[in-house]
Length: 101
Image: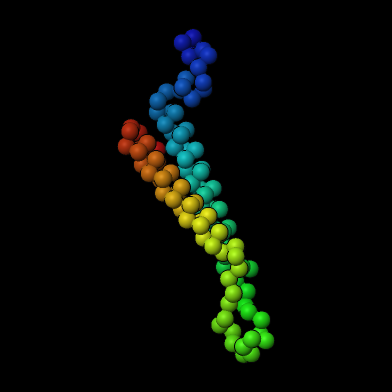
């Protein structure tokens, strides 16, 4: 035990334990990213598409106006999706390096 004195907690753990801890953290990050993606999807589908004023085309219900926030939501969603994919790849690499994560 004395040889572990002064080392960070993660470095003092057995390799298997530290790998499992890292894998758990990555899975937690993936879950948080997926929550963010669902929130963005909900925001894009609910209040961000409003029907155009009826004075232009009376009786037409198929005309919608996208606000200027929608492209930013789509870009943010794409970035989160890329992060999720990279974290999934990192998790696979951890699994391949020893015990399954």
